[in-house]
Length: 214
Image (cartoon, rainbow, N blue to C red):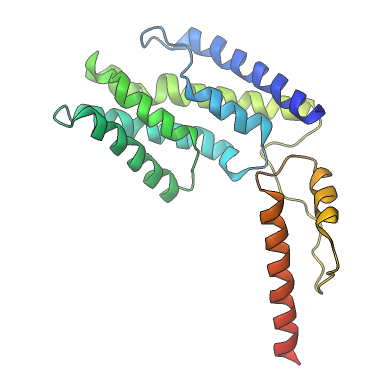
């Protein structure tokens, strides 16, 4: 409950910061904040340890997706349903290639295609991925860094420096994994069942390695 409350308050802080800063600089249809920032805030404040919530993913993922959405919208001969699908398709591909996969990026690409900012004028359309999208994403990231530090957490997330044992420990139960998972300082974006499977597979690999060396 405490973790959820901290994430909720963080999202409140982050969105307020993004809106205030955006309203002072963005002049595209007086849009101070784009809707996908709400989804980005969920990741940045609720699951900051997720690879999908890194500053690189939030800023680069949203910006590149907006560029793709605007680019697709420039091809006026494409039927709108196909244009929407194409923008999300290309956004996923580009984000994956640039190691900036960020689920809200799909919404950003779709939004840019539907808004068709270049219909105002070409300069406005080309600027849209940077103002307001990238600027919003950067402001949200800055707010997340500040909030997490003020609440005693580290963001961007850095994995634990604890040295892994060189020999298999084994004999842990699902309840042990559940308790350990709850003790993590930041929520992990992984299901406990998947985590259990990963540890079991690691045990199997370690056992096979031992046998091959004997």
